[in-house]
Length: 65
Image 1 (cartoon, rainbow, N blue to C red):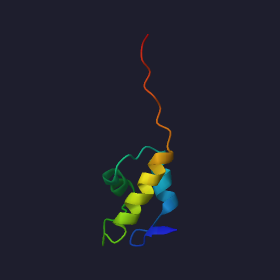
Image 2: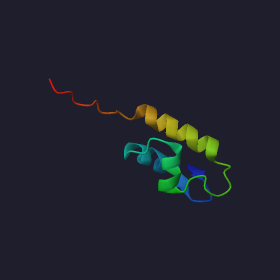
Image 3: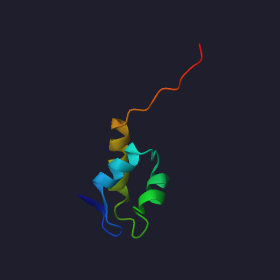
Image 4: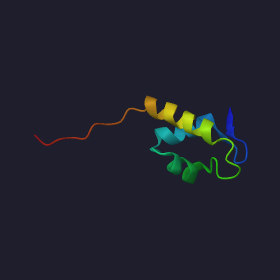
């Protein structure tokens, strides 16, 4: 489904960006251009990113013993 029509960004694009390391909406905008034009999609893009981040497994840092 298209989230940002102005820049042709889909929900799949947002989920892929999250899986590849995007952790904030500002990063998402920089990587995809999402919500850079009219801004009508911002709420849906943020919700999609938050949903995607909730499903991403964050690696735990290694601690020296």
